[in-house]
Image (cartoon, rainbow, N blue to C red; front, side, top):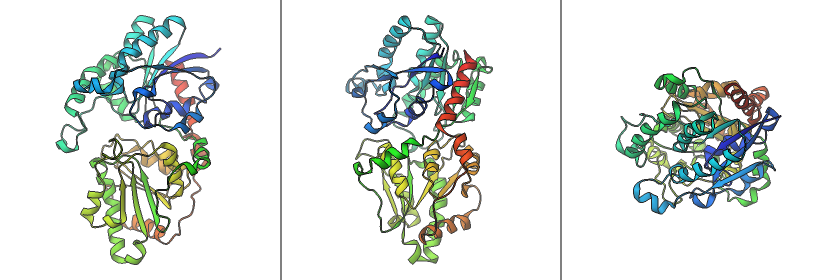
Length: 423
């Protein structure tokens, strides 16, 4: 008989949020690894995040989805409480209390970057004697921005820094298991809270979910094309920011050099940076184009700050000549987006912090052009760009065994093995 898993994920399809992707891609496989999952999420009407109805197609029939309310953002924002985690906290407590009173669950699993909701884990553990695990897709409390200029800090940083410093220990000192996309996150938490140093913990990245590519292709008529078909297009889709500048500068430097040597060839290339801002549509501030202007190549760089839907992203990646993934200057950053990039089979250029785990992962796949921004790889990157400009790059045949290793199915198996350990 399968064990029962209650998943807490404030965002869920059709919400087009990155932090619900692990849950979405895992739901088709939990049952085969011995777990029956139910999800508690926030009713989409209380969320301002963009929607992608196609995401719903991947949710298995029969999965129980429980929805909770949230306080109106217009009201709570007056007090600095705009996040969906804080707005839904009281409703989560009430709804899950009802579920735990009525039925048996073996484990509660928080998989979200809306971390404040995780403080309920300790409360439910104490009241119902149910263990809980937390999925650390990002750091919760972090001092990364403490020494950064004010203009580089996230909105409401002063408040969120202090709130996270207060809330994180309430959840972490009682947690029974940790999953993280980065081993560094787990190390930091176990050093910060010695009481959890011996709990089960695993570094499990997001997986590659192949059915998504077929859904994107099938529905391509729904999406407006973003790329100029008269040029050779190198595409990155994901957030921008000053922490990406070290990686992006390496690309821009090599591109400018190529433009100087063979301008007729390199003028055929466009570098696209799409969805670089988390701001509402039309309100994003470019963070990559100003850097391109510093290099004098802004004619060849297109930055679209507005975020696009998940399947529009996959379709655009498939339409590109080649793909680019820049890493953060934070060595703990893990680029979860590498898996859908790999599935497209497109030629790929990755530039990361020398300590980033993404470098080794991409090399496992067989990606030829993956570098750290601390080394001198100008000639190799210039050669990659030249091949793009000449239209010489073909679809890559990445290592199928590694694709299987990092598949959503295998990542779900590893999650379930951790769940079995901690109960």
